[in-house]
Length: 527
Image (cartoon, rainbow, N blue to C red):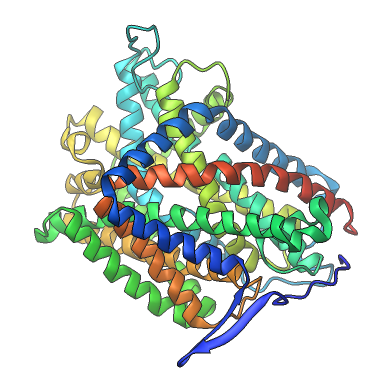
């Protein structure tokens, strides 16, 4: 245990406004809330200036710091793998006598639903198709000698190799690296909260670096950055989810596709998330996560059975081997020629995962007491990575098979949010499976918003996990507001992507320092 005079809630301000009671950290809550409100006002008042600013930020960050995002993600993977095989793997989160609060099924369902739900639904078909098409299209050079194509690495010389490279590139963005980012944050929070007795906030992980100063402005800045990263990471996912749900409703019920419909969807689903937030962790997130996993498994099995079953099963192993084969080249942060793929895809993804890491990491930490470090890392890093391999192989493999084997080009020609539904259109029970897909997007949407609100509230209340419910409601509402404002006023999805990569940049530095803190913290633990 770390001996410190700091107590949870020491710097908090308590009070009430009418019937609404609050208990918030000063100044983390005030600065975070004011900055978010100011951002909303600025974006609504000056939409053209905001759109230009966001676009410039996206370009500057992806082109200037691509090496940092890729290099940092490599460090996170290596750290996790070293800890798994090291003696530190025997350390139990919560102490030697601690036992898990949740069974494996509930635990895994919650961490997976919070970590990647909406993204897998949105990109499970479209990303493999995109990388397959660009790989098959080969390379192209501009006037200055730079590559202008979007193919990963050096593209592919044949159709068969384009399939393997396209699937490897897709799996790369969803397997070891993103889950290592989540694992680093989750492990640090669990270790310093349950084993060292510090508040469950991001700043606690930096006690070995800053000492008692972590309770002052260095810690305030870290927690505020975590709030911004989480809020914009969630807003991006909500925008993606709304676009895909809108496409599904248009296909099934003729609902118009456009910003108005997507805004109505964000408002409606945020309202559902509010209901779940008020029910708490056990009755809200846990229940929804288990529903998610059940529906996702059913949809996965349907696509496997309705598609070329034997081919999909056989190719899954081959795609895993392709991923491992191309992994060193895809994760290389320097000297790359495939700059469009590296910056437009990988840099954006790593920034997105990093921006999600405070939220997912803290959520994983809250439900992981009692696990050993080795059990935690294997379950958070390797098992979800294998699930992502299977998901991408089945959904992406089925779509590519439709294009290559059946000459069914509608799936490749459809708009990105509609590609999942276009793939299901070529299979039996289209209306039923499309409806299941829409429900999955919505429930993943709700789960992410719900658990994200719980986490932001924990950070802005100084580590209290039982803060007043109205505070969680406040953050849940503002996640939806930010998504609506960016979609409506400042360039839509591109602006969402710009903000997530901009907030992900400073937090990358935070996570790299966190790796040092984890090692120091584990070194002082009895094994």
